[in-house]
Image (cartoon, rainbow, N blue to C red):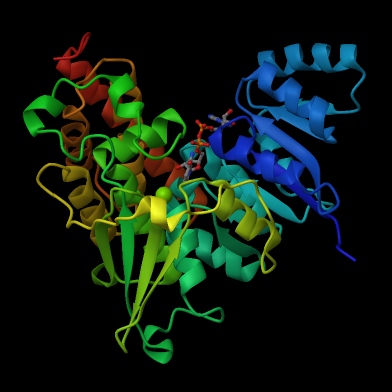
Length: 400
Ligand code: NAD
Ligand code: MG
Protein backbone atom coordinates (compact mmCIF):
# COMPACT_ATOMS: atom_id res chain seq x y z
CA UNK A 1 0.00 0.00 0.00
CA UNK A 2 1.30 3.48 -0.87
CA UNK A 3 1.57 5.86 2.07
CA UNK A 4 0.10 9.30 1.41
CA UNK A 5 2.72 12.03 1.69
CA UNK A 6 1.72 15.51 2.80
CA UNK A 7 3.11 18.41 0.85
CA UNK A 8 3.74 22.15 1.19
CA UNK A 9 4.49 23.98 -2.05
CA UNK A 10 6.30 27.27 -1.54
CA UNK A 11 5.75 29.37 -4.67
CA UNK A 12 2.86 27.24 -6.00
CA UNK A 13 1.71 29.84 -8.55
CA UNK A 14 5.07 29.97 -10.34
CA UNK A 15 6.46 27.86 -13.14
CA UNK A 16 7.91 25.10 -10.91
CA UNK A 17 4.94 25.30 -8.54
CA UNK A 18 2.43 24.77 -11.35
CA UNK A 19 4.46 21.84 -12.78
CA UNK A 20 4.58 20.30 -9.29
CA UNK A 21 0.79 20.48 -8.92
CA UNK A 22 0.43 18.96 -12.39
CA UNK A 23 2.41 15.90 -11.22
CA UNK A 24 0.63 15.78 -7.85
CA UNK A 25 -2.81 15.86 -9.54
CA UNK A 26 -1.91 12.67 -11.42
CA UNK A 27 -1.37 10.79 -8.13
CA UNK A 28 -4.17 11.61 -5.67
CA UNK A 29 -3.48 8.37 -3.77
CA UNK A 30 0.14 9.31 -3.16
CA UNK A 31 0.15 13.01 -2.38
CA UNK A 32 -1.98 15.38 -0.34
CA UNK A 33 -1.47 19.13 -0.57
CA UNK A 34 -1.35 20.62 2.94
CA UNK A 35 -0.30 24.19 2.06
CA UNK A 36 0.23 26.43 -0.94
CA UNK A 37 1.99 29.80 -0.97
CA UNK A 38 2.40 32.73 -3.35
CA UNK A 39 3.42 36.34 -3.47
CA UNK A 40 0.30 38.10 -4.79
CA UNK A 41 -1.30 36.07 -7.59
CA UNK A 42 -4.80 35.79 -6.11
CA UNK A 43 -6.60 34.31 -9.11
CA UNK A 44 -4.12 31.49 -9.61
CA UNK A 45 -4.10 30.74 -5.88
CA UNK A 46 -7.89 30.63 -5.78
CA UNK A 47 -7.94 28.21 -8.70
CA UNK A 48 -5.33 26.00 -6.98
CA UNK A 49 -7.28 26.07 -3.68
CA UNK A 50 -10.43 25.00 -5.54
CA UNK A 51 -8.60 22.04 -7.07
CA UNK A 52 -6.46 20.90 -4.12
CA UNK A 53 -8.32 22.16 -0.99
CA UNK A 54 -5.17 22.75 1.09
CA UNK A 55 -5.48 23.38 4.83
CA UNK A 56 -3.53 26.66 4.39
CA UNK A 57 -2.97 29.19 1.61
CA UNK A 58 -0.34 31.83 2.35
CA UNK A 59 0.05 35.09 0.44
CA UNK A 60 3.15 37.10 1.27
CA UNK A 61 1.24 40.28 0.69
CA UNK A 62 -1.42 41.17 3.33
CA UNK A 63 -3.75 42.92 0.87
CA UNK A 64 -3.71 39.92 -1.46
CA UNK A 65 -4.39 37.62 1.52
CA UNK A 66 -7.46 39.67 2.50
CA UNK A 67 -8.83 39.58 -1.05
CA UNK A 68 -8.20 35.84 -1.30
CA UNK A 69 -9.88 35.27 2.09
CA UNK A 70 -13.07 36.94 0.85
CA UNK A 71 -13.09 34.86 -2.34
CA UNK A 72 -12.35 31.62 -0.46
CA UNK A 73 -15.22 32.34 1.99
CA UNK A 74 -17.58 32.94 -0.92
CA UNK A 75 -16.71 29.59 -2.51
CA UNK A 76 -16.97 27.64 0.76
CA UNK A 77 -13.53 26.02 0.47
CA UNK A 78 -12.16 24.90 3.83
CA UNK A 79 -8.78 26.68 3.48
CA UNK A 80 -7.34 29.08 6.04
CA UNK A 81 -5.66 32.11 4.45
CA UNK A 82 -2.53 33.46 6.13
CA UNK A 83 -0.03 36.16 5.20
CA UNK A 84 3.55 37.27 5.76
CA UNK A 85 6.97 35.68 5.99
CA UNK A 86 6.29 34.05 9.39
CA UNK A 87 3.33 32.20 7.88
CA UNK A 88 5.55 31.00 5.02
CA UNK A 89 7.92 29.61 7.66
CA UNK A 90 5.01 28.10 9.57
CA UNK A 91 3.64 26.12 6.61
CA UNK A 92 7.17 24.99 5.68
CA UNK A 93 7.48 23.36 9.10
CA UNK A 94 3.98 22.01 9.86
CA UNK A 95 4.23 18.75 11.84
CA UNK A 96 1.89 16.92 9.42
CA UNK A 97 3.99 17.87 6.36
CA UNK A 98 6.56 15.39 4.98
CA UNK A 99 7.70 17.15 1.81
CA UNK A 100 8.37 20.83 1.14
CA UNK A 101 8.83 21.98 -2.44
CA UNK A 102 11.01 25.12 -2.21
CA UNK A 103 10.02 26.95 -5.40
CA UNK A 104 9.94 30.63 -4.43
CA UNK A 105 12.16 32.68 -6.73
CA UNK A 106 15.21 34.52 -5.41
CA UNK A 107 16.45 35.46 -1.95
CA UNK A 108 12.81 35.73 -0.82
CA UNK A 109 12.82 31.92 -0.62
CA UNK A 110 15.64 31.56 1.87
CA UNK A 111 13.77 31.87 5.21
CA UNK A 112 10.98 29.39 4.47
CA UNK A 113 13.49 26.97 2.88
CA UNK A 114 15.59 27.17 6.05
CA UNK A 115 12.44 26.57 8.13
CA UNK A 116 11.76 23.36 6.17
CA UNK A 117 15.33 22.10 6.72
CA UNK A 118 15.27 23.06 10.41
CA UNK A 119 12.19 20.90 10.89
CA UNK A 120 13.78 17.91 9.18
CA UNK A 121 11.57 17.76 6.09
CA UNK A 122 12.21 16.26 2.69
CA UNK A 123 13.25 19.50 1.00
CA UNK A 124 12.85 19.50 -2.78
CA UNK A 125 15.11 22.37 -3.73
CA UNK A 126 14.29 24.50 -6.75
CA UNK A 127 15.27 27.74 -4.98
CA UNK A 128 18.98 27.56 -5.87
CA UNK A 129 19.47 31.04 -4.36
CA UNK A 130 19.30 29.48 -0.85
CA UNK A 131 22.40 27.39 -1.56
CA UNK A 132 24.16 30.22 -3.39
CA UNK A 133 23.66 32.65 -0.52
CA UNK A 134 24.12 30.34 2.45
CA UNK A 135 25.71 27.12 1.15
CA UNK A 136 27.61 25.77 4.12
CA UNK A 137 25.16 27.06 6.73
CA UNK A 138 22.23 25.46 4.93
CA UNK A 139 24.06 22.15 4.37
CA UNK A 140 25.00 22.04 8.08
CA UNK A 141 21.37 22.56 9.07
CA UNK A 142 20.23 19.83 6.68
CA UNK A 143 22.67 17.40 8.35
CA UNK A 144 22.05 18.49 11.93
CA UNK A 145 18.26 18.33 11.62
CA UNK A 146 18.18 15.13 9.53
CA UNK A 147 16.44 16.81 6.64
CA UNK A 148 16.66 15.17 3.20
CA UNK A 149 17.75 17.47 0.39
CA UNK A 150 16.72 16.50 -3.13
CA UNK A 151 17.57 18.63 -6.19
CA UNK A 152 14.89 19.90 -8.55
CA UNK A 153 17.15 21.95 -10.83
CA UNK A 154 17.27 19.72 -13.93
CA UNK A 155 21.09 19.65 -14.09
CA UNK A 156 21.53 18.83 -10.41
CA UNK A 157 18.78 16.29 -10.56
CA UNK A 158 20.60 14.67 -13.50
CA UNK A 159 23.87 14.65 -11.53
CA UNK A 160 22.05 13.16 -8.54
CA UNK A 161 20.65 10.44 -10.81
CA UNK A 162 24.04 9.61 -12.37
CA UNK A 163 26.15 9.61 -9.19
CA UNK A 164 26.22 6.36 -7.19
CA UNK A 165 23.14 6.17 -4.94
CA UNK A 166 25.17 6.09 -1.69
CA UNK A 167 27.43 8.98 -2.75
CA UNK A 168 28.74 10.92 0.25
CA UNK A 169 31.07 13.40 -1.43
CA UNK A 170 34.12 11.12 -1.53
CA UNK A 171 35.00 11.24 -5.24
CA UNK A 172 38.03 8.94 -5.04
CA UNK A 173 36.09 6.23 -3.18
CA UNK A 174 33.49 5.87 -5.94
CA UNK A 175 35.79 6.67 -8.87
CA UNK A 176 34.16 9.93 -9.94
CA UNK A 177 36.48 12.26 -11.86
CA UNK A 178 34.26 15.27 -12.55
CA UNK A 179 30.83 16.68 -13.20
CA UNK A 180 29.82 17.92 -16.65
CA UNK A 181 27.22 20.62 -16.01
CA UNK A 182 25.24 21.25 -19.17
CA UNK A 183 23.86 24.63 -20.27
CA UNK A 184 21.69 25.43 -23.28
CA UNK A 185 23.60 28.69 -23.86
CA UNK A 186 20.30 30.60 -23.65
CA UNK A 187 18.65 32.74 -26.33
CA UNK A 188 21.83 34.72 -27.13
CA UNK A 189 24.27 31.87 -27.70
CA UNK A 190 24.74 32.97 -31.28
CA UNK A 191 24.12 36.70 -30.80
CA UNK A 192 27.10 39.06 -31.02
CA UNK A 193 28.06 41.24 -28.06
CA UNK A 194 27.17 44.34 -30.08
CA UNK A 195 23.66 42.99 -30.73
CA UNK A 196 23.29 41.90 -27.10
CA UNK A 197 23.61 45.56 -26.08
CA UNK A 198 20.15 46.23 -27.53
CA UNK A 199 18.15 43.10 -26.65
CA UNK A 200 14.76 43.63 -24.97
CA UNK A 201 13.36 41.91 -21.86
CA UNK A 202 10.96 40.00 -24.14
CA UNK A 203 13.87 38.64 -26.20
CA UNK A 204 15.83 37.74 -23.06
CA UNK A 205 12.85 35.88 -21.57
CA UNK A 206 12.24 33.84 -24.73
CA UNK A 207 14.30 30.78 -23.79
CA UNK A 208 14.78 28.39 -26.71
CA UNK A 209 14.02 25.17 -24.75
CA UNK A 210 12.35 25.94 -21.40
CA UNK A 211 9.34 27.99 -20.29
CA UNK A 212 10.28 29.47 -16.91
CA UNK A 213 9.74 32.46 -14.62
CA UNK A 214 11.16 35.82 -15.76
CA UNK A 215 14.08 36.00 -13.35
CA UNK A 216 15.58 32.59 -14.18
CA UNK A 217 14.93 33.27 -17.89
CA UNK A 218 17.06 36.44 -17.78
CA UNK A 219 19.66 34.53 -15.71
CA UNK A 220 19.77 31.92 -18.47
CA UNK A 221 20.27 34.63 -21.07
CA UNK A 222 23.24 36.17 -19.18
CA UNK A 223 24.41 32.68 -18.14
CA UNK A 224 24.35 33.83 -14.51
CA UNK A 225 21.97 30.90 -14.07
CA UNK A 226 24.86 28.56 -14.88
CA UNK A 227 27.09 30.56 -12.54
CA UNK A 228 24.57 30.10 -9.72
CA UNK A 229 24.33 26.42 -10.65
CA UNK A 230 28.10 25.97 -10.35
CA UNK A 231 27.83 27.23 -6.76
CA UNK A 232 24.75 25.05 -6.21
CA UNK A 233 26.63 21.96 -7.49
CA UNK A 234 29.59 22.80 -5.27
CA UNK A 235 27.44 22.62 -2.14
CA UNK A 236 25.12 19.79 -3.16
CA UNK A 237 27.84 17.41 -4.33
CA UNK A 238 30.88 18.65 -2.42
CA UNK A 239 32.56 19.37 -5.77
CA UNK A 240 35.62 21.61 -6.03
CA UNK A 241 35.21 24.30 -8.73
CA UNK A 242 37.80 22.53 -10.94
CA UNK A 243 35.68 19.35 -10.77
CA UNK A 244 32.77 21.15 -12.45
CA UNK A 245 33.03 21.59 -16.23
CA UNK A 246 30.35 23.70 -17.92
CA UNK A 247 29.31 22.21 -21.27
CA UNK A 248 27.15 24.13 -23.75
CA UNK A 249 24.58 21.70 -25.10
CA UNK A 250 22.01 23.68 -27.14
CA UNK A 251 19.38 20.93 -27.41
CA UNK A 252 18.85 20.59 -23.61
CA UNK A 253 18.28 16.83 -23.92
CA UNK A 254 21.22 15.74 -21.76
CA UNK A 255 20.66 17.46 -18.41
CA UNK A 256 24.19 16.85 -17.09
CA UNK A 257 26.78 14.07 -16.87
CA UNK A 258 29.19 12.45 -14.45
CA UNK A 259 32.60 11.25 -15.64
CA UNK A 260 34.21 8.27 -13.88
CA UNK A 261 37.91 7.33 -13.68
CA UNK A 262 37.45 4.28 -15.92
CA UNK A 263 36.38 6.55 -18.79
CA UNK A 264 32.63 6.01 -18.38
CA UNK A 265 30.44 9.08 -18.72
CA UNK A 266 26.90 8.65 -17.39
CA UNK A 267 24.23 11.04 -18.58
CA UNK A 268 20.55 11.60 -17.84
CA UNK A 269 18.41 12.44 -20.87
CA UNK A 270 14.81 13.57 -21.21
CA UNK A 271 12.71 16.11 -23.01
CA UNK A 272 13.19 19.53 -21.37
CA UNK A 273 10.19 19.43 -19.03
CA UNK A 274 10.54 20.17 -15.31
CA UNK A 275 7.95 17.52 -14.48
CA UNK A 276 10.67 14.87 -14.94
CA UNK A 277 12.98 16.04 -12.10
CA UNK A 278 9.93 17.00 -10.00
CA UNK A 279 8.39 13.52 -10.33
CA UNK A 280 11.77 11.90 -9.68
CA UNK A 281 12.24 13.53 -6.29
CA UNK A 282 8.55 13.58 -5.30
CA UNK A 283 8.39 9.78 -5.45
CA UNK A 284 12.08 9.06 -4.75
CA UNK A 285 13.30 6.32 -4.77
CA UNK A 286 10.29 5.11 -6.75
CA UNK A 287 9.45 6.25 -10.29
CA UNK A 288 6.06 7.63 -11.26
CA UNK A 289 4.36 8.71 -14.47
CA UNK A 290 4.22 12.50 -14.86
CA UNK A 291 2.81 13.36 -18.27
CA UNK A 292 6.14 14.12 -19.96
CA UNK A 293 6.30 13.17 -23.64
CA UNK A 294 8.66 10.17 -24.01
CA UNK A 295 12.01 11.11 -25.52
CA UNK A 296 12.20 10.29 -29.21
CA UNK A 297 15.95 9.98 -29.81
CA UNK A 298 15.40 9.46 -33.52
CA UNK A 299 13.63 12.80 -33.71
CA UNK A 300 16.38 14.47 -31.65
CA UNK A 301 18.94 12.86 -34.01
CA UNK A 302 21.83 15.13 -33.05
CA UNK A 303 23.41 16.27 -29.78
CA UNK A 304 25.95 19.14 -29.90
CA UNK A 305 28.52 20.27 -27.35
CA UNK A 306 30.59 23.48 -27.10
CA UNK A 307 32.87 25.11 -24.55
CA UNK A 308 31.45 28.20 -22.81
CA UNK A 309 32.36 31.69 -24.03
CA UNK A 310 33.53 33.57 -20.92
CA UNK A 311 34.11 36.89 -22.67
CA UNK A 312 30.57 37.03 -24.06
CA UNK A 313 29.09 35.80 -20.77
CA UNK A 314 31.13 37.45 -17.96
CA UNK A 315 28.56 36.38 -15.34
CA UNK A 316 30.07 32.90 -15.44
CA UNK A 317 33.45 34.24 -14.33
CA UNK A 318 31.83 36.47 -11.69
CA UNK A 319 30.21 33.39 -10.17
CA UNK A 320 33.47 31.41 -10.15
CA UNK A 321 35.17 34.42 -8.49
CA UNK A 322 32.45 34.66 -5.82
CA UNK A 323 32.73 30.95 -5.09
CA UNK A 324 36.52 31.24 -4.75
CA UNK A 325 36.21 34.31 -2.48
CA UNK A 326 33.72 32.43 -0.24
CA UNK A 327 32.05 33.88 2.87
CA UNK A 328 29.37 36.41 1.94
CA UNK A 329 30.66 36.92 -1.64
CA UNK A 330 28.07 34.60 -3.29
CA UNK A 331 25.26 36.30 -1.31
CA UNK A 332 26.50 39.68 -2.57
CA UNK A 333 26.69 38.31 -6.13
CA UNK A 334 23.15 36.99 -5.83
CA UNK A 335 21.68 40.22 -4.45
CA UNK A 336 23.45 42.38 -7.04
CA UNK A 337 22.19 40.05 -9.75
CA UNK A 338 18.60 40.21 -8.51
CA UNK A 339 18.63 44.03 -8.55
CA UNK A 340 20.35 44.07 -11.96
CA UNK A 341 17.81 41.64 -13.46
CA UNK A 342 14.89 43.60 -12.02
CA UNK A 343 16.39 46.84 -13.43
CA UNK A 344 16.84 45.26 -16.85
CA UNK A 345 13.26 43.94 -16.82
CA UNK A 346 12.09 47.50 -16.06
CA UNK A 347 14.26 48.74 -18.97
CA UNK A 348 16.42 50.84 -16.62
CA UNK A 349 19.67 49.24 -17.75
CA UNK A 350 20.88 47.53 -20.90
CA UNK A 351 21.25 43.76 -20.96
CA UNK A 352 25.04 44.03 -21.18
CA UNK A 353 25.11 46.34 -18.13
CA UNK A 354 23.93 43.44 -15.90
CA UNK A 355 27.45 41.95 -15.44
CA UNK A 356 29.03 45.43 -15.17
CA UNK A 357 26.67 46.37 -12.38
CA UNK A 358 27.22 43.09 -10.50
CA UNK A 359 31.00 43.41 -10.80
CA UNK A 360 30.96 46.97 -9.48
CA UNK A 361 28.70 46.10 -6.53
CA UNK A 362 31.03 43.19 -5.71
CA UNK A 363 33.94 45.63 -5.65
CA UNK A 364 32.05 48.08 -3.41
CA UNK A 365 30.73 45.69 -0.75
CA UNK A 366 33.40 43.92 1.29
CA UNK A 367 32.77 40.23 1.70
CA UNK A 368 33.34 38.57 5.04
CA UNK A 369 32.88 35.26 6.83
CA UNK A 370 29.32 34.18 7.51
CA UNK A 371 28.23 32.16 10.52
CA UNK A 372 24.45 32.42 10.54
CA UNK A 373 21.41 33.13 8.40
CA UNK A 374 21.36 36.64 9.89
CA UNK A 375 24.89 37.25 8.54
CA UNK A 376 23.69 36.13 5.11
CA UNK A 377 20.63 38.38 5.22
CA UNK A 378 22.80 41.32 6.33
CA UNK A 379 25.13 40.79 3.35
CA UNK A 380 22.09 40.53 1.07
CA UNK A 381 20.65 43.86 2.21
CA UNK A 382 24.02 45.65 2.09
CA UNK A 383 24.53 44.47 -1.48
CA UNK A 384 21.00 45.51 -2.51
CA UNK A 385 21.57 48.96 -1.02
CA UNK A 386 24.87 49.29 -2.90
CA UNK A 387 23.20 48.10 -6.12
CA UNK A 388 20.42 50.71 -5.85
CA UNK A 389 23.01 53.40 -5.06
CA UNK A 390 24.99 52.36 -8.13
CA UNK A 391 21.80 52.64 -10.21
CA UNK A 392 21.17 56.10 -8.78
CA UNK A 393 24.61 57.33 -9.82
CA UNK A 394 24.00 56.10 -13.37
CA UNK A 395 20.87 58.24 -13.75
CA UNK A 396 19.28 55.41 -15.66
CA UNK A 397 15.81 56.40 -16.72
CA UNK A 398 15.92 54.50 -19.94
CA UNK A 399 18.03 51.85 -21.52
CA UNK A 400 21.24 53.05 -23.09
P1 NAD B 1 8.33 32.05 -10.96
O1 NAD B 1 8.64 33.49 -11.01
O2 NAD B 1 7.57 31.43 -12.07
O3 NAD B 1 7.52 31.74 -9.60
C1 NAD B 1 7.96 32.18 -8.37
C2 NAD B 1 6.99 31.83 -7.24
O4 NAD B 1 7.47 32.46 -6.04
C3 NAD B 1 5.57 32.34 -7.46
O5 NAD B 1 4.65 31.45 -6.88
C4 NAD B 1 5.54 33.67 -6.68
O6 NAD B 1 4.25 34.03 -6.22
C5 NAD B 1 6.46 33.35 -5.52
N1 NAD B 1 7.16 34.54 -5.03
C6 NAD B 1 7.78 35.49 -5.76
N2 NAD B 1 8.29 36.44 -4.96
C7 NAD B 1 7.99 36.07 -3.70
C8 NAD B 1 8.24 36.64 -2.44
N3 NAD B 1 8.89 37.81 -2.31
N4 NAD B 1 7.80 36.00 -1.34
C9 NAD B 1 7.11 34.84 -1.45
N5 NAD B 1 6.83 34.24 -2.62
C10 NAD B 1 7.26 34.86 -3.73
O7 NAD B 1 9.71 31.30 -10.72
P2 NAD B 1 10.14 29.83 -11.22
O8 NAD B 1 10.64 29.92 -12.61
O9 NAD B 1 9.09 28.84 -10.87
O10 NAD B 1 11.43 29.58 -10.30
C11 NAD B 1 11.32 29.28 -8.94
C12 NAD B 1 12.68 28.81 -8.43
O11 NAD B 1 13.00 27.58 -9.07
C13 NAD B 1 13.83 29.78 -8.74
O12 NAD B 1 14.74 29.77 -7.68
C14 NAD B 1 14.48 29.17 -9.99
O13 NAD B 1 15.85 29.47 -10.09
C15 NAD B 1 14.25 27.69 -9.74
N6 NAD B 1 14.21 26.88 -10.96
C16 NAD B 1 13.22 27.10 -11.87
C17 NAD B 1 13.16 26.33 -13.03
C18 NAD B 1 12.05 26.52 -14.04
O14 NAD B 1 11.95 25.74 -14.98
N7 NAD B 1 11.18 27.52 -13.89
C19 NAD B 1 14.15 25.36 -13.27
C20 NAD B 1 15.14 25.18 -12.32
C21 NAD B 1 15.16 25.93 -11.17
MG1 MG C 1 18.93 24.44 -14.23
